[in-house]
Length: 505
Image (cartoon, rainbow, N blue to C red; front, side, top):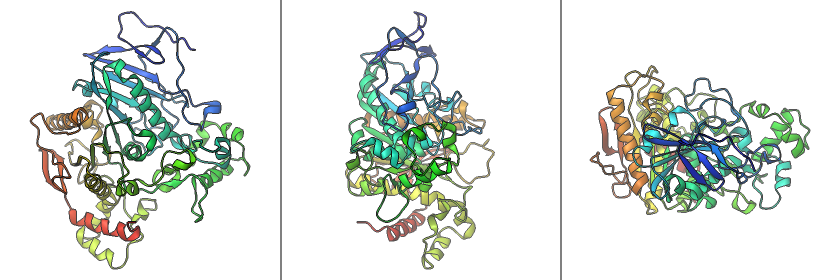
């Protein structure tokens, strides 16, 4: 039992399963911050499945956000949030205008950051403006980097049969959804109407929730913002084909950190958390996207694309989309896992690609965005619609006149302040057209959360992908436009290229 500090009597209260929490009210919105949804994953709980949060006596002050999870320095990233930083970070934050007995849609935000950084506490993700649109907003922290996604033979041996190894961060997200299921009603939320939405790595986690059996029934709509789609996971355990499993990667890291080849769990847990940050684990390079296997007590049994192709994803309404110039700064000649994506291109394929992109300069500027984001989003949308589920594809092309970067479209992650209607947290000044775009996106997103269809409110009709194949909604500086998928010829080439490299089963 813990007895948190009490708060003044005139502040809003809610009773969750762990005890009474005392929030804050501002501009008609009530917030509760730093709520533990699981026990602190410290000491012997490092690299274990999340455990239930402790109960407390009396009242817990929920006026301050909790610590962000262990991660590298923010370096100006407005999606990270303020210090302090700690392994004791499994908390969430709630914004609502409802009260117990209401049944408002619930939206649970999963932040991005390459599974290496970010938090649910950043001002960018303040849920007040969305809550004013009739929803309950929840933002979460989950374990990052090697604390959240890590394998080692010693951890496998300790977990035994049926124990979780590797996907601790994803398990945290699922635990947060279980907490929402059990406690949403205390904030006026409907546990039977939960939308998960996330961007970049957060979007990739949403796609994994879509294929995780343990997440079934915990959410009822899903939104994937720039969330990959054809990424390949790394198996936790040793593989017969000699590819480096998560265990092999973990062994190599432990040795580099100065531990013996037969390091014990105690030796691993004795490593300072900051030591786990260097060298940085690779998001797309296989260190953090994990396939741990249902049969082994894990969460993910196959790659996302395979599960969608087999019709084994969650049968829920889906919004999925990308930005128009996601990785404009990154070239396919770069030495990175992303740069390697076109390495398998044949001599016959390359001229067709160059022609489709208008030459080498256009190819260099846009092909990685298409390979990583645009074609995979269209592909998952096609599969989900084919499987009979409501699907809505979008393309975000709103570019503020004040944006200082050289660009030819909307860069990666630039849609977040529009979705949350938090232009005050934008890294560049905003204007009236930006607010119009924010009103549109926040309106579509919250309407989708309410009824599984983003249409309504007098806005531009958004084509449903199953009924109007290969049509999407494009967000532009002049407002939303329904249209065919842009640059479809480029995406068709990429679809054929991926199909040749990894033929459908």
